[in-house]
Length: 249
Image (cartoon, rainbow, N blue to C red; front, side, top):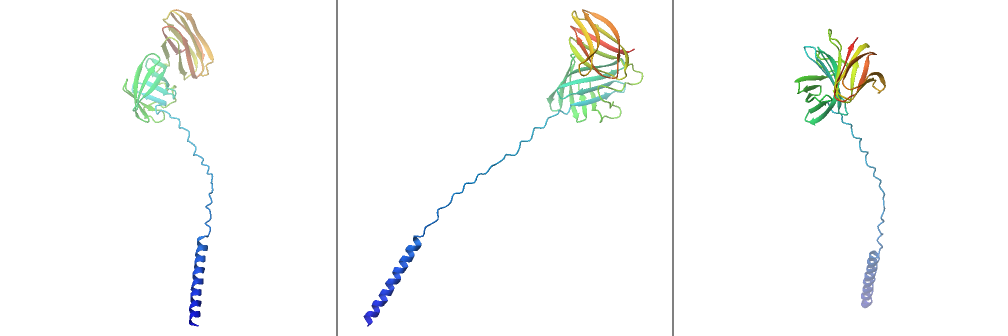
């Protein structure tokens, strides 16, 4: 009887061991899930590049100078590197044109069509110094009370001044001028060249308004014309130095 009991115990232990092994094998044999690869397409839109800001040189604009003795000088600098200037002194008035260039550090050079050259220094955003003549210009609208603050190239003509406009050059040229008070004008022209001397007045669109002179060789003469208040151009075809004056008749 005792032997049977021992045998039964051994059978139970064996059964338990077998069951444990099978359970372990079953656990170890469990299938591990295969990882899933998910592809995601991401569209990246780059931020738009800001459009470049147009640079305008601080000298661009109209400036004015008025001395105690009545000299008026009003230059206007344009963004394309050209300028025009209107002046008045006790002997008369006139305009001329030229080009300017920024040479860095607030310095500028200029060249006038009649051959004159010089330099400026931008002292402040509204103050410009002419180094060649030791004059200070102020931007129109910000000038001290002693400066002229009208739109260039038209300036205030001091009382007692005759409004005589003088234009001069050497060779072919087109120069701007303004009439501040319309009426009749005596236009005198002289030329020392040996070729054509052809002169006419155009409006700001290039339309011919008055044919003044059509001569060959050295010449001196005049013509009377009527001009309204406004801006004009004197177009000259010449060889050598010439001078044209406009005097109210």
